[in-house]
Image (cartoon, rainbow, N blue to C red; front, side, top):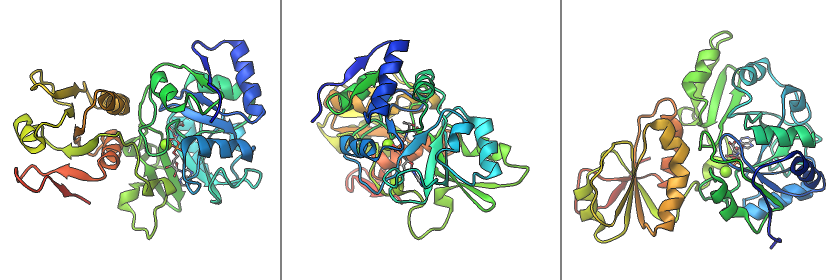
Length: 348
Ligand code: TXA
Ligand code: MG
């Protein structure tokens, strides 16, 4: 176990220099991005990367995302970058888009879990950019959570997860998007979304008309094994049990879960809930995305045992939200047909 992390509340030039030095010397640093907080290290230092895997308890076969300052720095980690990738980066970066590209041999294989490809993005958060600019190295950074847990989207969440495990934790406020970046892979004339995020299928398709690429989500592609190692792991899970519901029916929920402490995440606005039920009502889909993980963690802290999450239509950012809800709920839907038994059906 490491010493306590140095906490930086409002970052100054001197802090940036210290952080850059720490990264160059093999340290690991929690920093804000526009999606979620990341846990970063020098991509070329395999011992530092090993520390990331250890701090997170991350399986060694799950590769990391590498953050670069700009397209010029991309050349340090990726080779044979296709035109379409440049087009997508130019349109959506800096921002929450990650592209899987052929990896340069100079990147240690631990970063990509032995894969010949590397996932790269150009973050837009000013603190992430300031660090990348100061350190002048690409930074490998998975989300700053213990493996399997919701990604931190606030400084407090990041601190709670990583306080005793890292060298620095930088407060950059609340993350703008709250869900991890969209990860895509380019295959012949298709762009496949491996992980949906704030750069949506519709947004990608709109810039891929000339030349024409078809944008598909991973579940629309027939494959024998997961396209992205991350797909096979349980993810984003609070301690409470999670079920997806299409419509919130408080009476039915009370009947099904008896006297358990219940939490509900909904996009319907309602004011009256019975005692013992904690309700979090999101204003819209962006608010749902932004505050989902935070709501999970807050419900855990209030002793909630069962969290019911309301489903959303699978379009736009709704795809990313549903992807995380399904993972958190391990695909469990509350059966809204039968009230007695069984409690839920498994929906594949
Ligand atoms: O928004 C984000 O992307 C955040 C912030 C910190 O940038 N990072 C993040 O990293 O979510 P992480 O490590 O938690 O998720 C990386 C995902 C995993 O699902 C992993 O399997 C996939 O990207 N991935 C990484 N390299 C890959 C590769 N070469 N091929 C396919 N999938 C890859
Ligand atoms: Mg993660």
